[in-house]
Image 1: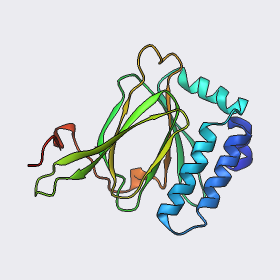
Image 2 (image 1 turned 90 degrees about the horizontal axis):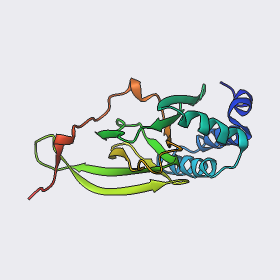
Image 3 (image 1 turned 135 degrees about the vertical axis):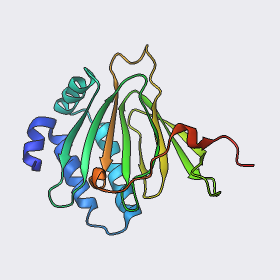
Length: 189
């Protein structure tokens, strides 16, 4: 999909966003690249572009995941997710080189971070959790373990929980770290 086609279906602000993502790829340093992508996403999340907001309304009408853009040169992917009230992903990472940026368009999501316990088991411990709301975005770099959970309540879910997820590459093609909720320990004494 080229940027001109994107602007027709998702608005001119989304087309500008794609251009900003492509510009971020001019830097080699992953942390800076992720920061630039996060900043670009925050600008998109706060956009008042009518075409973009109409797309968000349509996406909110039923839980779904949609690929919005896949860059033919750099391979990054932009996804949009409409989460149900009970949505949660177990702790996971995005491989040795993969990274993501999560951003909240609507609703509220908690993203928790974890680290290995250091023993020989496969257990991990909770390090932090952050509640994200409209306009907030956060990058998770290679090796950073995290989970997501919908925080939106029944009362404020009438417009749906919409999360944007930027993928630095096609994560289905790389080995990823995956954990179960049972792998999270509450104490590492």
